[in-house]
Amino acid sequence: MTSVREYVIGQLARYRLVPVSTSSSQLADKFSELSGDDVELDETMEGLIVLQRFDHLSKKEMLRLAHKHLLERNSNN
Image (tube, rainbow, N blue to C red):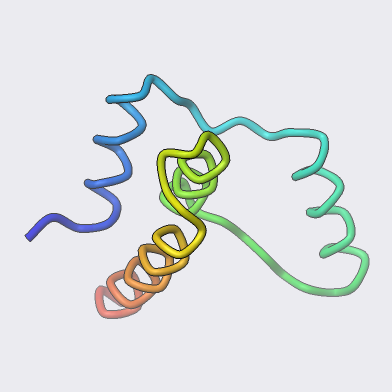
């Protein structure tokens, strides 16, 4: 069974996408920082966001995969 991380890496390569920080994501990060929230996205989560942003995943698929990724990541700790 393929992990979400492996799936995301494959899809990013397939569509030749690279997660990059946008002005909107930088603003969201700043709001999170100012509100005291500690939100750190790993490269898999950033990849899911990019795939959804470019319509290679629906929002529903992105959320399902993000949840699965968190479960996989937490089971490895």
